[in-house]
Every structure is written in C-alpha cells, then in structure tokens.
Length: 265
Image 1 (cartoon, rainbow, N blue to C red):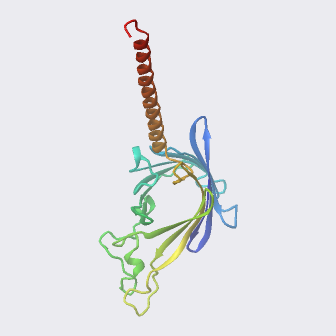
Image 2: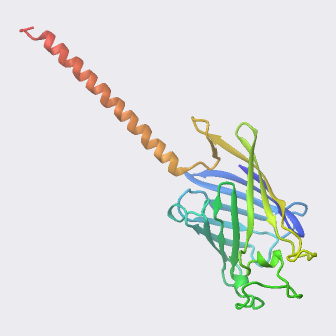
C-alpha cells in the first residue's frame, strides 16, 4: 500500500492512494486519486490496473466529474522486462476514451536514473500538435531576446525536463517515507545574464508499506516476480540436492548391511 501527496505549480496538490489486490491469483492494483480539498474536481479518478513485474500494464479508469473522458483504458509499456514500464528509463503510454470521439492520447516519458537521481522529461500528442512551437528555434528566447534558465530547460529547449532526486527514510517496521525533490528553473529575470538561479523544491511526499526478505533486505510491497521465481527454483534445487545426498547415504548403509550379512563375512 502507498499513499502520496504530489505538489503542482499554481494548482492544488494531488492525493493518491494505491492498494495492491490479488484476484483469482492475478496481481492487481486499485488507485484513488483526487485533489487535496475538492472531491468534486476533475482530478477525482478511480482505477484498476494489472500489477505484473513483466509485460505491459493495462489500466481501467473512471473519472466521475470529467464529462469529456469519464471512462477509458490506458496501455503502458516500457523498456523493462518483456516491455514492463516499472522502473524503466523510457515508457510509452496510450490513453483510449470509451465515450469520446477524440483520438487516443499518446505520451512518451524519459526517466533515466542514476541511484536516487534522475532526469525526467515527457512529450504528449497535444504538445506535438501545438503550432506555437517553431521547429527552427533550437533554444527559445523570451520577448527581450534573452535566454533564461526556464527557456533553456523547457521541453523545446536543449535539455528539456526536470532534475529529480529521492530521499527514503524508515518510519516504523516495514513502513518507509519518501520525499521527492525537483530542481526548478525560474523564468523571472534579474541582473544575472540568465535570470534567477535554479532552486530545489519538494515535489512529492509518500508513505509506502514494504516487506523484508530473510536477509533483512527491504523490498517494495509489490515484490518482484522474477526474484520470487528464482528463489523458488533455488529452494527446489536445494531440496533435490538434499534428497540425492540422503539417497547416497542410505545406499551406502544398505551395502554395508549386505556385506555384514553375507556368508563369507
């Protein structure tokens, strides 16, 4: 189980609760998402998704307060195990609206990660169709013709996206807290040639239930199907080796008994 609070600029924070489920042996996950102070806002969303460690993720969602896209299906894949988007450096997502006549929304996310640090950038179909972005402007400038930090790191700039860091700390046994940090690039100009300097801000707070293996290593509550399978195979192999050893020991004892009972002994 995981509960998180995601902060947004000039908007109410997003509250999200994720609960893992197990139905007929299939791992699923339910999610409730809404704004922090208004349950009637369009941010309210209920969803159920698959929870496999390998392969794409399928998610059904329901937004009761959004008349444009109340029901839909999300297909998410990545460069992880067999196309899994979990902790993958690049993911692709397609959102289909069951009741709307519009085209599916397509999203491409880049999240290369090095330890607790990552660079995140996203592109969606609505941005691609925006005619305001000039293809020949490699580095966009403001009205004064100056290049600012915000323009340089804007999606159409040289290094689009944001720099993200994560801090994990224990709260109680099997419960950890997580703090997400984002490096912001303000557009306000000062005497400095590129405007105000970048600054760090808190982007997300989360509490997550985790589990520990026999070695005491902390693992996510979703577990790891690949690791579980490997551990099960090792356990079976160990049992077979033990049975083989007992079989050899019994065979030796039987041979000794035969030799002691033989007439020539």
